[in-house]
Amino acid sequence: MVTSNFIQCLYNQHQQATTAFPDKELAQEFIDGFFEFLFIPQKQKRMSQYELTKEFESYKSHLSALIYDVNADGEQTQSVTDLFFENIPAIYDLLLKDAEAILQSDPAAKTIEEVLMAYPGFYATAVYRFSHQLVLLGVKILPRIFSEYAHSKTGIDIHPGAEIGSSFFIDHGTGIVIGETTHIGNNVKIYQGVTLGALSVSKIQVKPKRHPSIEDNVIIYSGATILGGDTVIGHDSVIGGNVWLTNSVLPYSIVYHKSEVSIRDNNPLPEALNFVI
Image (cartoon, rainbow, N blue to C red):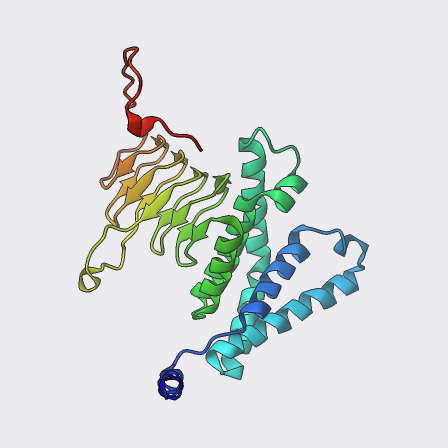
């Protein structure tokens, strides 16, 4: 009886759902396949230009099917798909600038191929740029599925609604969170554990711009937290590790968290600190 009631409740809940979702596995296959098509050419370098064209067209068909699952409008789907792929050359150029920024900024990066194949920050940025284009074209749900897939693979959470300029450098990347209304300028470097987030407010108090703005040539070191839609980090500033900011800083600022060191005596540490892992 309990099972029957629950199934009835579950059925009713499913019938009330109004949002259409694309197949997540097909969405993941598209984003990984398209990324490899553009940036990891082991297979593609053996293809003729004709074969590359056919492969490119197959990704258009794949994305079109995913978009149609969301909007169920054939004409709109075709228009959005065409516009998305018309913008791919510009997105590709942007991503090559991102990769070059990583190569120039990270002493551990030896070649551009290493960046394209092995750097999670580049992968997350690429998925963001594809997803952001879909947001600009008014596609619902699918951009978040793409971005959350990248999040699950890299630990880097970039909302597809954020605006990010050229030559964007993520180093290491694990734990980075970039909120929906964040604005990031050109030549910005962000290290692991950085949060660009919103101040906690009630739902009815939410403003259109909830997340900070980061101007050109800013460096944000690991563990920094910058919150609020009115917070602007002026260009050419450096935000040190573990800094917490809810107010703006002027251009050319250096903001750091002051560490204090005290020398303890020779007495044993308190019992609470005597632990092993």
